Image (cartoon, rainbow, N blue to C red; front, side):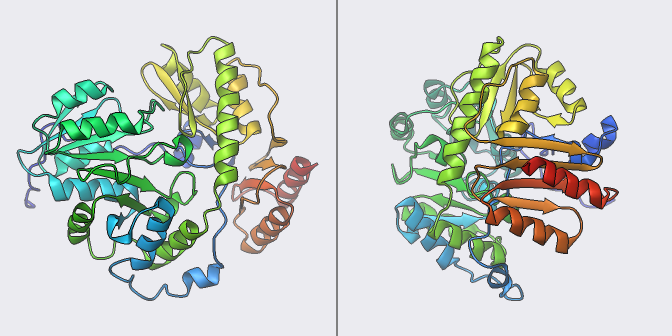
Length: 413
């Protein structure tokens, strides 16, 4: 028999990944190119590299510089703090695990709201901690957290999209001065509230996966007091962020190009929210890059949408729908019985056999072509980026050349 792993905290359950595009397609007899994800809370269009690809890859044979000084300096400049107040790791998930590793252990107590991002509880229980959950209410969290080592908050919340004013979180931190209040600010750019540098027992965790559009790089940074940042840095694994990812992330933070993404996403979010409200869904205000539609029919509706290749996140009483392009979003709106109102940007989604093309003419040059032919992909990306379009073109391996070219030409026309 193999050796047993050390015990995890009571109630530990491993993270469950959502079905892949290929799995959804196979489940419903669809082309993978015709499956659109509205469940990942990342931008629909791929962010452009902030430096030439050759430069980004130039040091791919070299280990990262261990302190990640350049990345921490860039994050500090973006966040308005000092480099010694920044810790980095592999995405927000890496930082959540690092906080748990540093401040929790067997017998310790962590407190989190429910429902929320499950990794807070997973990371806590991996370290052997007990996890206590409460409703999303700061008074309830303060009461539950009187003996806690770590209190986890998500602001804006996920899956609720609700946002607490920073001053209210600061009052919670003052009331729980012996606990570390770890605030996940993954959606900070869409909400605008931050607790960065608010108190010595507060850490703000951020990611480049959302507004920056670099989910695949797995880069996150945390803003904390110098003492907390140093403790996190000492317990971080030696090189959790790849050299190439760190270079790209530092360049993106030094010269952030996210204003268009944030502005258009917020505008589109409100368009989708108003359309769903008009047909009877309860659509509370949100401060992230998704819309919440509350209905007791959520599980059934999520399954029906998936059967059409429109993958949303379904909960017992609500749907969480990531904002994509106007034309992509209109597919979901119509499937839910809503009449899409006019959009601010000219957009279309075209389907042909084995091909999907999503285009926003009034875009900012965020393009991705995934046809399996590198030369063709480069040509398509260059053509559309130079025109200022946003583009997401996906083709199955079996797609014909004429269908790929025809779908792109039709979409632009």
